[in-house]
Image 1 (tube, rainbow, N blue to C red):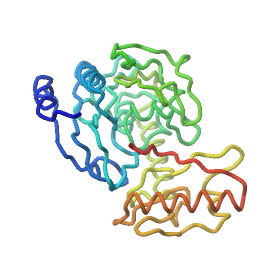
Image 2: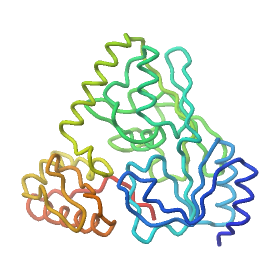
Image 3: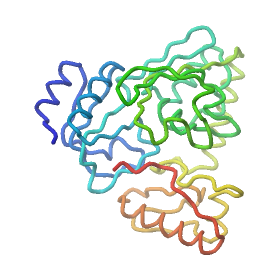
Image 4: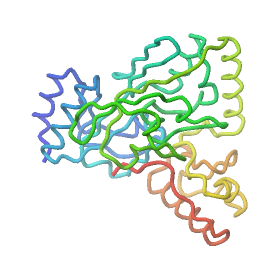
Length: 301
């Protein structure tokens, strides 16, 4: 049972913003979804630990989002509390050739900080939407680079809300996977190890990477990025193309005509539209090719 008044008092003590009955459509890049019982903007690891302990002790259903770039929210919303690791918890510090980033910092912001400091190693990741926490959680990557290549250590809260540190070798990085996948751990800070480079060359490489994205991906429409994980032995977009599904629509959801690996929101899509379209894609691809596609975005439930 959620006691909003009690939770509001706790947030006041911690200096965290709380928004009761908050629509989540504004906090996910797909731009749809119903409300949650309360959304709380995290401002420190200590605040996160206190709030997590409070919610777990009272068996309150909760979820966690960053920028919401890899999240699907149902039309009915989320019957619980959502902890937002965003702009209130987004500091980036530079120490030598390392970036120390709070989990709410945008990956794009970290790339810019690195470029301005003449630090190389993040160029191919520029333009990936989302926060550092989300990027580590799913081992985000593009154009041959992944988070596993640059992460040195990660600080996180364990199931008992203790602050722990884990090294790269123990993070179990894989394709869109890390040790955090499916576990009750909450990432609070990421240390990234880079190498010295020339700011102008780094900036040029970042601009080239962004130009590739703009030319190939439907960035002008709301989406959750790549909709399906890459199946072993093929590519989701190739399979969807082969099945003649490019441009297929359900309500306001459409398979992008620019890149069929993206399901986009034409401006009035609901979660039901997107899920119906994804089911059609999965079933058709399975029937015609034998491959079984799997959603990449996480459904908040």
